[in-house]
Every structure is written in C-alpha cells, then in structure tokens.
Amino acid sequence: MTTLPEDPHDPANPTDPARASGEVGERLADTLESAVLADAAKILDGAVDPEEIASMDQLDAPRRVLFVHAHPDDETIGNGATMARYVAKGAHVTLVTCTLGEEGEVLVPELAHLAADQEDSLGRQRVHELATAMEALGVTDHRFLGGVGRYRDSGMMGLASNERPDSFWQADLDQAAGQLVAVIREVRPQVLVTYDEKGGYGHPDHIQAHRVAMRAVDLAGDDAYGEDEPWQIAKVYWNLLPRSVIQRWIEALREQGSNFFEVESADELPFAAPDELVTTVVDAVTHVEAKLAAMRAHATQIAVDGPFFALSNNIGLQAWGLEYYRCVKGEAIPDPEDPDGRETDLFAGVV
Image 1 (tube, one colour):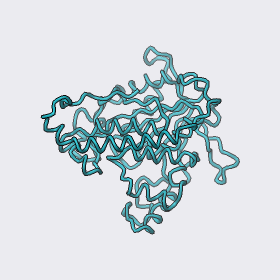
Image 2 (cartoon, helix red, strand yellow):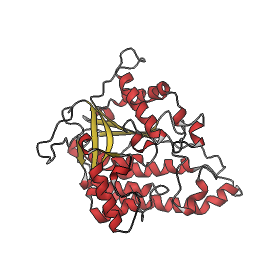
Image 3 (cartoon, one colour):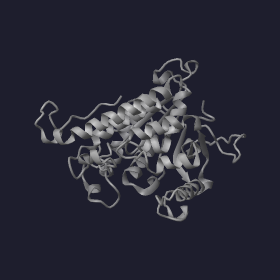
Image 4 (cartoon, rainbow, N blue to C red):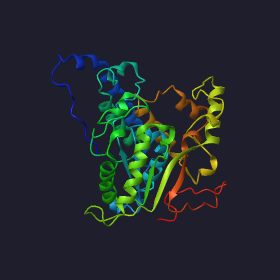
C-alpha cells in the first residue's frame, strides 16, 4: 500500500552533488534492507496458519485491527509483537502512520546527510525503512495519513519545527480525522490502537495522533458524517508502559553499565504508567524475532548495539514480547488464566 514520494534530486544525473554525497549511505541502506528482508523471509516462512486465513481480502478477515502511529518505528517499538501475532492468526492488520519522521535523529553516521538540518531527505529513507519493517512483521496494509508526505514531523515539543504550517502539530483536527475516518470505514476494524492523551512521552505528533484517532472513532460511527456507511469501532486501546516494567528495564541496563534512561526510578519518567491502568497484556513472545527484525529495519533510528537490543539480551524475550494496553472503549475481558487477572486478547468479547 505504500508509495514513495518523488526524489527531489534527479537519480539519472550522476553529477548531482546530493546524489554523489549520498552514494555510500544509499549502499549501506540497501545492505541493511537486504539483511532485514532475509531475516524476515526466514521468520515469516510458515508463520501464518493457512487454515486461519480464508482470504487475504481485508473484509474477509473475521478480525481487523487498526494501529495509528505518529512516525515510522513507533509502531514496531510499541506494538510490533502484537502486530506480528495477529497477522499470524489471520487478522487483517492495518497501520496508519501520520508523518514520515523527517525531524528524527540519524544514528547511522554514513546517513547523517539525510538529516533535517542538512539534505532534509530523512523522510524518504524512513518510508523505505517502514516498508521493510512491515514486511518483517507480515503487515501488508500500511498507509500514511492523507497520503505520503501530507503531514510533516513536528519535532520535539517546543522546537521551531512545531510551528511549520505543514507540521502534523498544526494540522486541522477535523480534516485529519476525516482522512482517518475514510480508512476506518473502508477497513472496518473492530479494534483501534493508539497513544494515550499525553502521547506517551509528550511528543506533539503522538499527542496529535491520539486526538485525530479518538476524533475519527467518533466521526466514523456518526450517521450524519460523510456519505460512506458508518462504522462503530467496538474497542479502543491506548499503548502503555507500566512503571514496574520500566523499572526492571532501568535496573537491567544499569547492570550492563548503561544509564540510557538517565534516572534512578521509573517514577521520574513521564511515560511510566501506573500498573493499575493496564487492562490488557498481549503475550507475543513467540513473535519477538519478527519484532527485532522490524527494529533492525528502522536503522536510522534504532542502533543494533544500543539499549533496545541490550534489553532482550539481558531480560530475555519478554522484554519485547509482552506489550501492554489500556482499554478505553468497550470492555476488557479478563483472562482467567492470567495471573494478574488481565485481558490477554484485544479481540476478547468481539469476535
């Protein structure tokens, strides 16, 4: 479903200085993508049970879930294992990404020229990274809100980039929500997943994605809105990171000599949610390898030798295989087999 934005430089012109300066980086990006795709092929071979999938057509899938995220890589970090699990179970998984992530920090020195303060072409690279990550997870329906490049990454809160008229932070709420309504009424998901009202850690695009998603949920079910057939989403979830989980991460990284979170206690982090807010935990440990392959695909944003991968080395697959949610629309149905009495299936009580 993803289409690429036009390259501002002529790829046929070998004298283009921007092209020349990026040749090494492009070769590196191609190598990284090839490696991730090779991993994905191994992971996905036989991962989908053919008896659970009568058709790949989205409306033929009995279970359909929509994830709404701000930038490429957010979906993998927060929901990658969940996405892979439901794909493997035959659900139709749709991802809507709101920006290209143009303002992101580039962690690969050979690709530093792509940054917003240099060539400002990181967005195009991240489109490729997202496509590769979705292949690793098995997700075939991934789209950009309003089309590729419609909304620009706003950057961290308080930066001048927040004020750009094309930034997602400046988007008209009802217009952006209307674009998401079109997807909802087409796909008809029973479940929608997005951020909480704080956007997790307060990034303006995460907050805006929350606002757009929640507004779209209301509008999509409104008979008086638009001309397409209304669709009521049965359950809405917000991503959460429980305080107790983050504390384990802090302590595990500290044992490895890393002070990645730069705090002693999870209580000091704004995105650490009280454990009692968690209604649902999805155990997708068997799909962690797919998630890690997708994380490797986001090469400009996630360092392979960085703290994200160190967590899985130190804590084990549970570090990335358990993903946590708060049900805010519909009813969370506790799993009697869960030791904490939480729900373990986003579709519980729906289908």
